[in-house]
Image: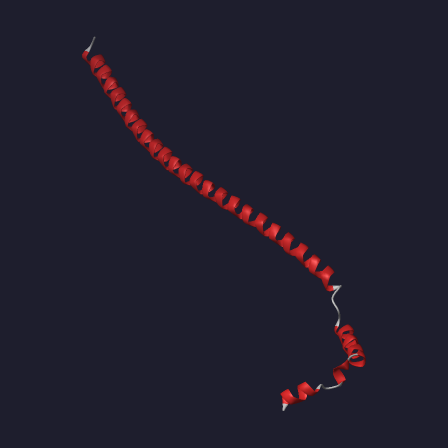
Length: 121
């Protein structure tokens, strides 16, 4: 082979080696970037899962609290209904006044006993 051909083959080989080295360097850089992205993604995923668990726990607590409040409101409502039914049975002021007037008419409270006079003086 002539010297020019050998030089030409040698320069082609050098170019191929240079390009191969360049491609390997690029590939290593891309792999490093990919590793960085994967680690950040894993970190984000981990923190998101943790937040989701905490949020779900809070939702469960809120649900239990709301159920308890609902039960308490129902008990209060039932008690109010019972009280309202009983209130209808209570005597009104005018009923009490009528009874007082009847007692005054019927009872001996108009007359003072001698014992009461001695105690008061």
